[in-house]
Length: 317
Image 1 (cartoon, rainbow, N blue to C red):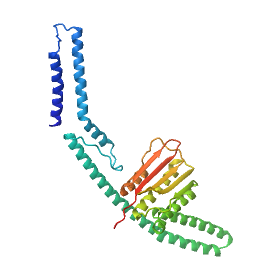
Image 2: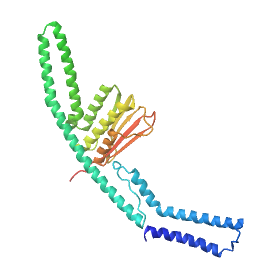
Image 3: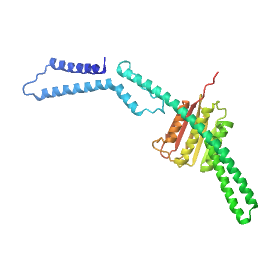
């Protein structure tokens, strides 16, 4: 039966039952309606309306749940599904919606993965050009300035030494940018060493106290998983420096039994509700690439915790 006929039949049953009660009950209605008769009719009407509303609410409840999910669904939080009722059009509609949601989540993960891989390739190219072109040019300038300063008379020597110091600081900044764009230590020495270098640089440039703990004997991770963990840690520390007003940050990498747990916890001001800007959305997209879970908890005055639970890739036989 269609939804219309089911609602129609329900209404017919309610009205028919009410009519039968009025016909069979020992109640009469006089020409001038008495107060008792009016009370009986009004009570009967109220009962019919309440019963009709309750039955309609029960019958249309799956559609209400579907509407609520459609207004709140977020493809960066996969797995949101509705339980299907056993039969009827609502069941078919919910089944179709769940299938559509699964397809959209898969397509979003695929497209995000391609975009992130292209982004990493572009970062690698820019880092390489900065290292090879700008870095080498600035190194050559430093050598020329040093030779000129050694041969220049005293008034000019001091100015050349100042220019040499400015150039050296700029070269250090270029190297730091290269490490942020593409951490060579991640490729050469692995995730633990890369996190150690990242937290050391962060503490040096921000003045915050950073406590780092990495479990020994972590499961083997593929390069893609290591890169996602590193980027999430990098973005989390950037958010701490920009927004948290913190004094200490704890970074830990632990074996969670079939998963690797990355925690970044600060003692900053926290927030009542987490506002997801471009940084957090980017972290969620990276987590989606691995099928990982990103959880953010915060409270005013209690700091913020960011946890990434990344599944350990299965070994290929």
